[in-house]
Image (cartoon, rainbow, N blue to C red; front, side):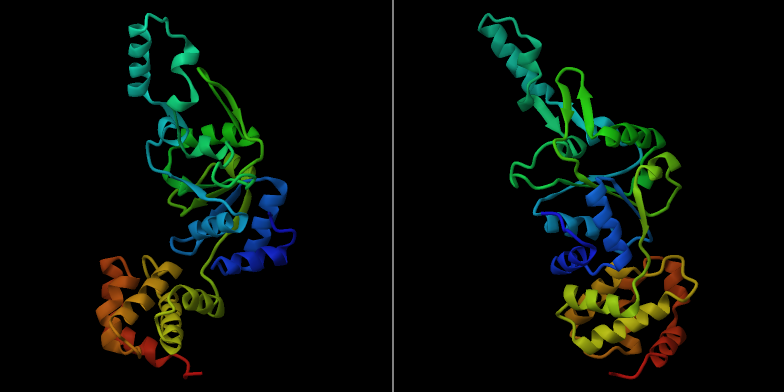
Length: 298
């Protein structure tokens, strides 16, 4: 069942391992209550995709994911016909002396349902649950695909010429994400509730790391989060996101590191930083300075 308040939304998300800000929980609650798509923007690795996964868990359903890319078309996003099976059905009908009709060739079992079409149909594995559709990295798709989404999401229905109109009995929760590699058209944003997801404050990121990387000692988690927050104040091409902080703590734990020191940071810096220029910028002197500036143990 959908949450009945913002506080309940926060609580349910936390139960499913997602530590949201109140602003983000409010946006999700309103998207569910108003049956509007939720458009999330932010740097990579700040938890946009994870919110859709947590929302699916909260609603008791499985998440449908459409990963966007340049050249994405309806055959990959919406549907296409299973032509080999249709040809087989055609030949079987001819062998039996029958004349195939449209209702023979264009039946549901020949329809390959892609994520957008699946989102309009009931979840057979979770009867009664609201579908959750993640349209991930919409900024990587072409502008014509955005225009197609405008039509589909306005009424949550689509017409397949040979099959008929498929209409959602219940509007799915649609979560769209963007890393802002390009600007998404205003017409699409206007149809959504919008929320920017930034890097979390220290205490919330520490709670996330504690939940996602429990194998790392508490003091190591604290020192790692403090170090990452100092990296984010530097002029880097790509600052580490929450996902990198979690991976780094897991990597340190896998190496049996119990205390953060310059050598362990230098050895594992590639887990945090993904560009050579950033790795060169965070040299030994900067690492030592970041560690020296860290707060005293609690």
